[in-house]
Image (cartoon, rainbow, N blue to C red; front, side, top):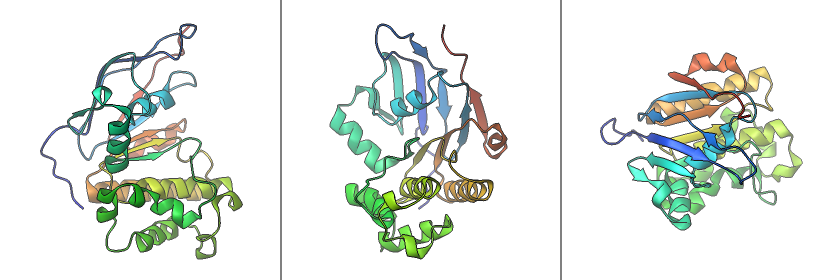
Length: 230
């Protein structure tokens, strides 16, 4: 599936802030503008709000102030149900804690977005199951593991399954929170190559958060969040 470069930017934020509670300092984020098909690497010390920013962009949190526009939609003005639907249809998220469904198999976890979104199911091709299996193979998950529950697999394997789940169904935006933290160098490189190759083919925008600065060379842009608030 190829997405036109025409139309609104994939992602835009303006004057974005967030505060967990009155006792916590307010997090202030730089304005972002990511065109369709562009890839942004985001890094910064712990406590600067990298994961919080991704949760805001995914519509799982609402900002204290500012605006978030994804694919021309002001998601910060949408209700919770609308944000959930938008995320299911248009965003692939690799969560830092994976957020896999523990009672489902590896394969079923990967195909889950196709059961939640008819758009993602259609974009996955005639057989989402076969597409999931190809993704699992590309990320070096052996066939013998596809029907195992994810709780029976290693942390590194679970992280790759979470990555495959984010990629299936050609979402226009990928938000990846430390997606290679549990991977050895070979599997890290395999994942980066697969992610960016698929993103180039489908003109997908990628926002990638990592402490590993060596990965920045693979991305069109990079931004460092500021120091931890006092």
